Length: 278
Image 1 (tube, one colour):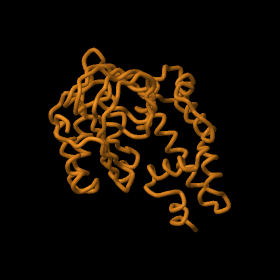
Image 2: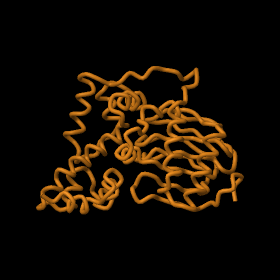
Image 3: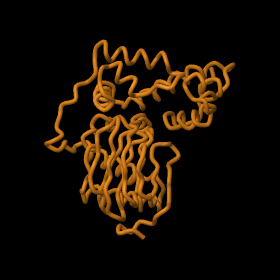
Image 4: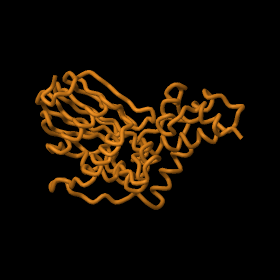
């Protein structure tokens, strides 16, 4: 039992693919933080130690202690290290949330919050309450859904610390169009953020901010959205197998494709094909 009274080593997920919760212990780590398609909210519930994360998203560095909240933007790879810790994590699929809520918070609004640790009793209390409610009622209660929106609104109002304040200018004009054209032409291939950043004449971190400001999505999230939209067009062709369609949008593993498709659309490719069968 942690200082916040939350049972460890438990995970929960909703059926719509919008949220997942997990509470677990982590050993000390140094290396690469792989990009995830979700916004990650992490509440430290035990142990005190340092964390450093540097990469495509905002730099994060500081001391994690019980009650501290850190967030990671979707689709941002990074390297760094973290001391032994115990975290209550809430993973939020912002694309799926946006599809079900017209007032959902955009990624761009959360960039300042991702650059700092939050010793905010309000965030800690809400996350703990959501966990306890989810254990009792699952992730589909009205309380849980409103709580997620409360967290996102709170984080979106977070100002950048004074020594990090900087204006983020949206990528636009030919530079933006060149990036979008490259993405469209290579949906079946691996596309690295560093390559897109070089095309735009920026480093990866600046590019992620300016691209998000222009499109409302991180590069990783935008590429996934475009791949799923292309996949839906292909699914209308009954002669194409799910495996063929997965390969055509950059997934060598059909299971990974189905997981990504379900996160975005709420149903599997096969189910989508049946619903939209002309």
